[in-house]
Image (cartoon, rainbow, N blue to C red; front, side):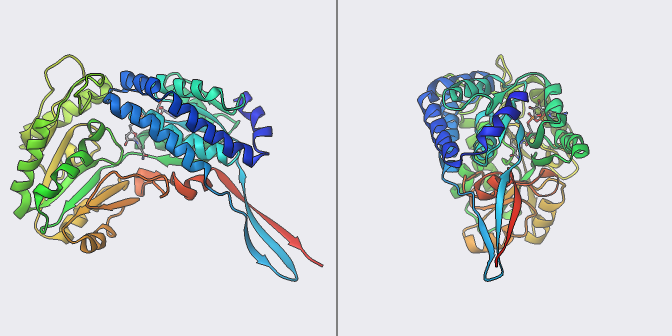
Length: 424
Ligand code: NAD
């Protein structure tokens, strides 16, 4: 914390230098993408191509962020005065990240925080500290001392970051329950906070859809990273006329994907990352099955050493079952039916989660109108999970406070200052 506070005094002064440093970070990550990707796969579990892809994704984010403007907006300039709105850095940023995408989610925080002139202390999840430590090691050669600090340890360290007096802003990604603790911990010191929290994303399939055409995209919208994605599809609402055809398509995909260790060449889905999460997914699926749900694919552990779970498609599910009402964060997808679109929208919104959602139709315009009625930060049409560096990403309701990415994410690492100059 001391070294971040010291570094801030100089780092804040030279915007052009910071911009160049971000580009150098991108180059440093690309140069070591294979090595870092392997570390990520070994501790997180995702297929190696995805691990390496995540490092390239982070490099892309650094490069893109380097191109963002920190604007000086002039709101009045006449004979009497000139009034400018500027954006100042906040100081030391405490960044706290989860275990599902440790590197790219770190880059969403580090790159804009540094561009704005802040310095960073980042605490990775205790389940995946190594790839963030390796990231810090890679960036050490291009960033001045103290500008970026990676500190790994247990959960208590996250609590320490969110209460430390040197920290002026906490940027947190993780679960709703921990997010609430961070908000409470930051309040007495009025630290600024951005919270990117969990989701229970609905996908509404309109009756005009041909299930065969959307099944693959929908499947990967739910099962990417073995379902361990904040904004994965976590509940499907399909019109009852299309239910059977969609279940058949999804079940076939679920049975055909290759589940295995991330370092095995043909693996498409890795294991669940850690034992508590594995046990949670096993429990949610078992509970649904014993309450009347039926698995049209999967339904149990994959029967090999490790936290492998069969990709699971559930029917006969309903609101009131935990697999529907809670965030499962694993490779199990409940498929619910509806008759009336208004009813589907109401049920999709009947939750305190509000991260993202999607609507699927052969008429994208009609789908966009339904999508706009979803109470969430991002509503996709005929796709799910396409997160962009250019657009703000964040959650409504309990899924978060504030946003990341694009100029909106950058502004979250700044405070406005008005310079009001009297003339004459
Ligand atoms: P988590 O809340 O258990 O942990 C997240 C981080 O918080 C870890 O680094 C942990 O060490 C730290 N932490 C633990 N206790 C803390 C405390 N009292 N104060 C401060 N920090 C503390 O979450 P997780 O299990 O690592 O991640 C999964 C969750 O993250 C899911 O709910 C998922 O939806 C969410 N997530 C959200 C986004 C998003 O952008 N909205 C992205 C990825 C994951």
